[in-house]
Length: 379
Image 1 (cartoon, rainbow, N blue to C red):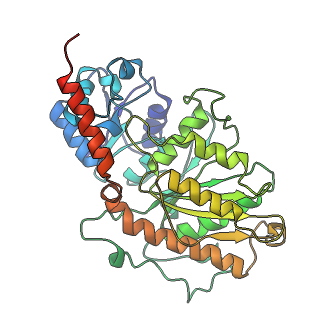
Image 2 (image 1 turned 90 degrees about the horizontal axis):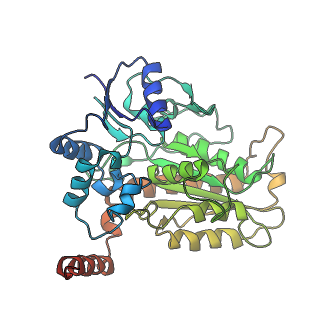
Image 3 (image 1 turned 60 degrees about the vertical axis):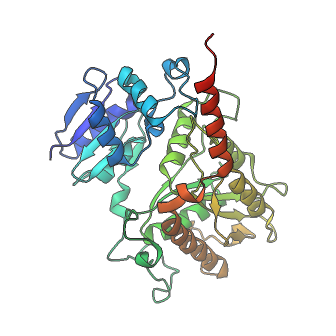
């Protein structure tokens, strides 16, 4: 089929997505949906293909979102679709449809998964270079070239069929990695990179957020580009790995700022609820568990499924060589354990995370809010 992109030429993410498609040899059917919006039936079909709820497609930054009171969680899916049909600007963009499926491509690199022959790298309008992580997926064969400390006979691929049901999704788990230091030689970043290599060996799609330039919480609006980037990655992910240094017996402010910018609820969508989480820490002195314990508390607060295993690396400066690679040790083996467990729990829970986190109290609250709205007296 000819790929389709529902495009807004005024949106940088949409322009980047279209440019990636063309750079990959595609000549898509470009639909400027503000001029030619999809029909109601087609919109419903798109939502089904993307496996999105109507609220997850709503663009909340538009003024009309607040004017219409669309943040009211009692509104039905039909009412939200009515609003998008009446005001197409409320549809988030870009939506891409290919023979591989359909997706809301935010961030734009998500389009790589939908292309038959995606480019290996692409430079965005702002100069950021992104890489086709699809090339890093290792499914039938596994490479140990980047894992010199691994014992190949003991590292086993994930037995996916043991963990999922027949109709569960089978795409590579999407893992977001956050680290908590801006130092030039950051040991939390180096530990995160080691974990990312292992996660990719296990077949995951891994993206790492660079906290450089992220403003302090409440110091600016949430439409800051770095905040938007972080929130889009959080929404994209199905699991996370948090790696923080221990500073004054606690997590760093850089780590906490990232977590604080991820809202518990954004327009009725909870970007972290039901997703898996693994926690790790690095220390300059003796081994401690203060930081991983606090990360666990934050994970519970964010309604995430935090795996039992964890990693704490004492005297981290002794664990990495001059090439910034971690040396073979029981501490490295623990990181492998953590990654293996995170991948298993993600496969196990992601197909049913919505059901696992469905709460009686929230159903009651939604019913009561709906009753108040339906029965309110005319003003």
